[in-house]
Image (cartoon, rainbow, N blue to C red; front, top):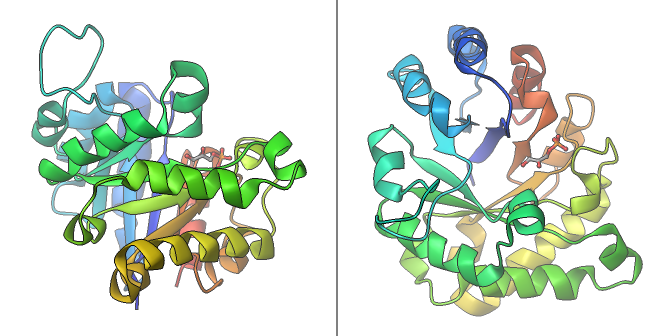
Length: 252
Ligand code: 13P
């Protein structure tokens, strides 16, 4: 049985006071996290160390939203794996479509970051997904398959056991338009098939593949009940304790 991993991507929301308020509410309710479900929050960099103190000793785990591919140096505005580790992170989202779209990230840069993160014992959440135009032109499998091969390039089977893939169709992010459970499941099964071809059955069977894109309390149970959907990467609905917990509970 694969763990279900529900991660909240806070994006560029929540200052320090708002971070304290939301995490206070989340930490108070961890008894609602079902057995076999891992709950992760990914606040902005500025909130990480406060968040780390607040989740310490609780069942909520901490992740970041991005990371530099370099160890250290003259890279103004960048954040290294070492900084994320010392701030208390266990996870890091890499290659989110917003980073690809607005900040020029590519499969190659995401792959380099993934290798750094894994060597630092940070668990990468590697994001892939097609645009609406790509879906409508029938190239979803080719695009997403290419991204999966690209971001995994050169990773070992042992490293594969320490990462998560998040399938986030770009057209479903922040649009309220979610993939149907069948549409999402088809892509998840395709991704697992690629991983099976590259790394064999055992690795592919233990890989956690999250779905992201307008996951809400009213659609999460059906999405999460699909065979190959092992969790969710939640944007808007993770910004309130109530809706985030409804999604977490629905993963059972
Ligand atoms: P929404 O849940 O707001 O659509 O965002 C999804 C997402 O991008 C999570 O990384």
